[in-house]
Length: 481
Ligand SMILES: Cc1cc2nc3c(=O)[nH]c(=O)nc-3n(C[C@H](O)[C@H](O)[C@H](O)COP(=O)(O)OP(=O)(O)OC[C@H]3O[C@@H](n4cnc5c(N)ncnc54)[C@H](O)[C@@H]3O)c2cc1C
Image (cartoon, rainbow, N blue to C red; front, side, top):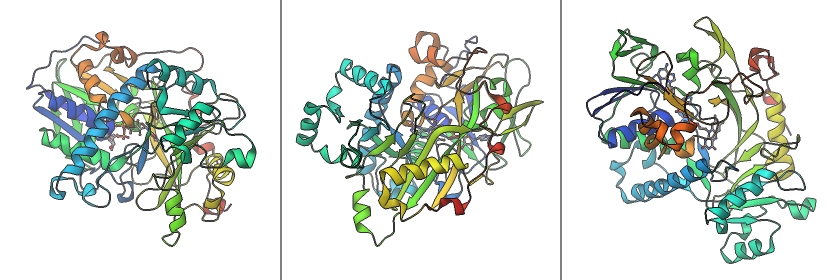
C-alpha cells in the first residue's frame, strides 16, 4: 500500500468514471463531508439515465443485474452484499415515497422501484450439487440465514418453501418432471436490480450531496493523468483543459487499464456476452409466467468446476417484456496499443460490437432450448458485448497506484460489483483516507501482483484463445433455433 495522503473536507477529489465504482465513491465521499468532489465521464450518463437503449456503453449501464449473497467461501463479499441489501431496501422505500418531480427522469416513467426480491434459483446442470453450493449453504447456516435458502432435494426445505409461498419458484424449468433430476438451491433473499435506474438514482443522490459531474464527450473525457510536480496530480481532458486535484481516483471500468497501463497484469478488460428475448404484447401468458412474481433470476451450471459448466444466467422479464440472458463461461479480450504496450481495451464507445462470438450464442441457445423451450419459438431479439474489468483473483482493486503520488484506482469489478453500489464507497473512502490496512476490504482490494500460475485468465495475454478477433462472430442467421 502506498503512503497514505492526508485528506480534509476541502481536498479537491477528482473521480474518473460515473459507473458503479465512481458513483458509490463520490456519494460516500460527499456524505462523509468532502465538499469538493468532481466526477468526469466521457458519456452523458445524466440525460440518458444510463439507459443502454439510449446508447450508453458501460458495465453499469444495463437493464438489470443480479443481487446475490451466495459467495461460496468468500464470506466477506456475502456480508457486504447483505449490508448493501439493507440500503437497496431503503432506496426502494425512499423512491416509493417521493413525488415524481423529486426523482430522476428514468424513475418517473414505468415502475418506481430498483430492487426486486424475486429469488435466485441456482440450477445445477448435472446430477450433483457443486461444492460452491454446499459451501454457500454452510456459510448461510453460520450467519444464521439458512432459512432463506431452499434446497430442491431437501424435504424440510421444500415443505418450508410451500408454507412460505416460494414453492412455485423451486423448479421453474420443470427439470425434475422432464429430466428426472433437479439439483438447485433457491435463495429467497436475492433477486435483481434495474441497473440503469439504480445508477441514475445514485447519481441524483450524489448531486444532492454536492458532487459536481462533468459528463461530456470532450469536457468529461480524460486523456491523461499526470503530475505537475510530485505533489498534485492533474487530469487532462479532451477539450485541452488541465484539472489539478489533491487526489485522483480512476474508476474507468473496462477503460481503466487504458488510463493506467501499469495496472495491466493486475486487471484485464474483458467482455461478457448477453442476448435478449422480447415477449410479444399479445402473449399475456408469457408476460405472466416470466414476471418477477412468478420467475426468479436463474443460473444454470454456474462455476460447477466439472468441466461441463454451462455458466448461463437469466432474468425475469423487465417492465418492457425483455428477458436478458447472459453467458459467463468465456470472457473475451481485445488488444490494442496503449503507451507502448499491448493491452486489452474495450472496442471504442458507440461502435461497440453488437454481435457475440458463436460459442456464447450457442450456449445461450442451448439454455433456452433445454430449459425454456417456449422462448425458442420467439427467437432472440438482440445480442451485445458488455465490457468490464477482471482482476487476477476476481476481487476488486482499490488502492493508491505505485509510482503515481495521489492517484488511486477503484476497479476490478470482475463481473460482480454492481450489487455493492449502495455500500462500496463506504469501504473505498476508508482506503482513500489511508486506513485500508486496518480493514478487511482494504486488505482484500490492495494493489497486488502475481506472475505465477493461473491468474483468472490474465496469464493468457494476446496469444490466448479468448481474443475476440480470433472468434467467429454470430450473425442474425445464427440466431435461428
Ligand atoms: C455482462 C455483465 C454482467 C454483469 N452482471 C452482474 C451482476 O449480475 N451482478 C453484479 O453485481 N455485477 C455484475 N456485473 C459487474 C458490474 O456490472 C460491474 O462490476 C460494475 O458495473 C463496474 O462498474 P465500473 O464503475 O467499474 O465500470 P463502468 O460501469 O464500466 O463505468 C466506467 C465509466 O467510466 C467512464 N470512462 C472510462 N474511461 C473514461 C475516460 N477516459 N474519461 C472519462 N470517462 C471514462 C465510462 O464512460 C463509464 O461510464 C456484470 C458485468 C457485466 C459486464
